[in-house]
Image (cartoon, rainbow, N blue to C red; front, side, top):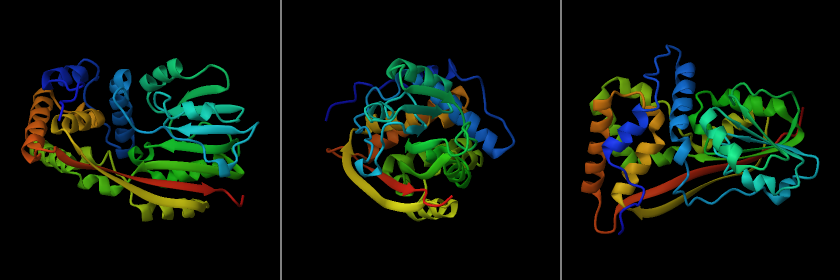
Length: 294
């Protein structure tokens, strides 16, 4: 197996965080804490986000009938990678929304200026009028939001009657991955009781909870399924990828804790790997739903 070409040393990783992060996130309100931490983490990651990703870009489902004149919203659009396929649809306007200004700056470089607009905003308080959207897309964003009930209510509010949504996000079984267990164990050892708050910033839902929240908001389920993809990965790459993915957590640690976390996660990952690498998988839940009553 080849070592990941994107791997960086713990000192480089720590420098990336500490050169950008404006200190700890200390809000006493959990929701405010989560929003600030996630915004900070993705602002830090914006420059190189997705550079080594091989994940397939989403497509707009044909049976949802996105048509000329439709307005499409991409929640958690990030750098615009997930928004690019929407530009190829016949929609008249595509709106990208993200909490991170750094990500949106990247999206400005990615997306064409015609038919697209970008908004820095919170999915729990969508800065859009009632029944102003025809279709909503979201890729791997909702599991970072502390109040998914409110998010689904907001999506219901802004969708027109007959409007549709297509959401894909990581599900709860992803937490069983060896690299996730390693990270959580080391973080608890380093931060003690504080780890509970830090780890609470990423709460991937179960397939049952997604359906329940969607139905409670008033949506009719069109399709709901989960997909698991197993693979073997280079342990160094797995550690590096997870450390970057959890920047919004790691940026809240001091320099010594960051260095210790990076080294210990890498060492543990290598110790659990065999000649074929470290066991790994993705677990994603996809929900497609429609607003059928006002």
